Image 1 (cartoon, rainbow, N blue to C red):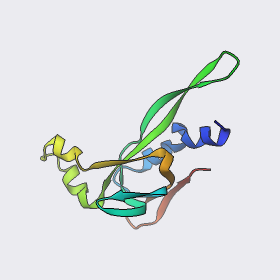
Image 2: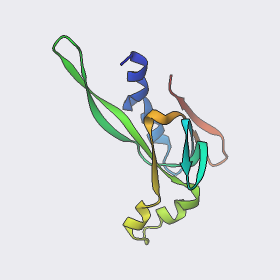
Image 3: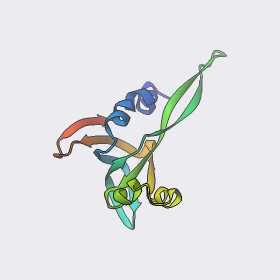
Image 4: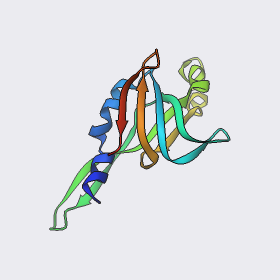
Length: 126
């Protein structure tokens, strides 16, 4: 794996998105189109949930290795489902059916917008 790939997957690089995303509008630009609710799209407008990470062990080739936390997926809730998802009176299992996700490998960039739709953060893979 090259240095760019190591950087693009690093959880620390993307932590700013997690910090700013609660209750904010997010736009995910995808590398490959994805079908959501029967529509194929290259971008997703949604509310992001905290990213899911996993630890990956990399071999250094000289007998050593290192562990690295990498972003695995980006869970999200579409705006059409957010009111239902946030209503704690709804059963948890039904609320969780509103959560979808996209693999980090398929995300090119993420924009976080404020309530006036002004870009607060524009994070891209290098």
